[in-house]
Length: 248
Length: 248
DNA sequence: TAGTGGTCTAGACCACCGT
DNA sequence: CGGTGGTCTAGACCACTAA
Image (cartoon, rainbow over all chains, first blue to last red):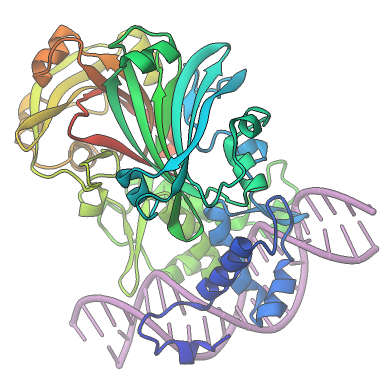
């Protein structure tokens, strides 16, 4: 590790703890520690990198704030996972009238196809036009009532063995499956929300009249290094549930 | 300040930096430092509270993360203000197709009335039913096109001199006016989003057909101590603009 | 009891800003 | 230049967990 005085002359100054953070991120991305596992203790990492515990702490603090790591006092620091209960509703912002997470969720896969990427999909996923992509359509229901119709696009190269059967036999969040079976961890997402009218095909799946108002949620999901790896177009029926958002 | 060993026996343990944070929050709430002003330096505060600079730092770190304070290297730490450019679009999440903040914003006040709080409004604002509230309706336009119809409810006691004239003559965000003229600073908000159909009165104001899909945004806004001080029902026209959200 | 993260301190030095 | 926040260190002790 370069001492601060040497690094300070670099055109783009980066403090030591950020370099440590980058090294840790690299190890996470490279799979040195898997989701759910503990990473080495702060003192071990400090020894490995030749810095003080405080510097490692600050790097881990930022990674924990970004939900890449989870600290547990007395136990250690763990790689975040979409398997954990606390992660279940981090990306799905639907809530009941009372602000609680809705129960009795069920996912039905409508279809799963491989095809050549349309130009706009390719551009958003940073693929070459015509490269292979996977398109998944699925219906989310709560208490037996359809609530969300999702159309999902994934890079074909990253999701080779993905089939409707594999998706249907999976229990829990899709992101848990993606992380376990395909080694792709969703880190953050950017959503664009609009109100639209249900067209005939959407209305049929959601069992509402044609023209009913629906919340359209377009999501771009990113993995490490801000690499986009998923696109979603979700039609949300918001008569009983709503999309919840906190403005800090 | 109690030493750690004494405080440790308290039933609800709170570290020293959180006590400092509470003291700072109290000074902010009490108006010792006004929005836009600098607070004392870290070393001054450390001396005042009889703790180390590091402990003050950690307290300020959290307040900065909550957008109550703004750090500026080499200059000092300042009380956050809704006047600043960076705060303008913190609560208004509308973006253009390209993800930019929309330009040419104009606010037109439709009316401003004082009345006795309906039961549900009173409950949400933690007022006694029948207490005075102010109801404001206003239309936000971008590039001359109506985009948001807002209905706003405020506690009458906190907003005594608020009139349609005062609102209309104000330039900039309402929250800047509220903070300057009424001493009430909006800290955070909780929003519930739904898709609805435009009824006749809303359709007229937004110049859309009756039944057009609109994004309904219901907001509860809080000041210090999680005290709710504003309710909003906004009807958003999302054909050209959309509601943008980042999922961390 | 050993090991982990969490808090607190004191001190040194760096980066940045305004004068 | 002096003063501010930002980084880094070394060391002490506390709180929590699991064995």
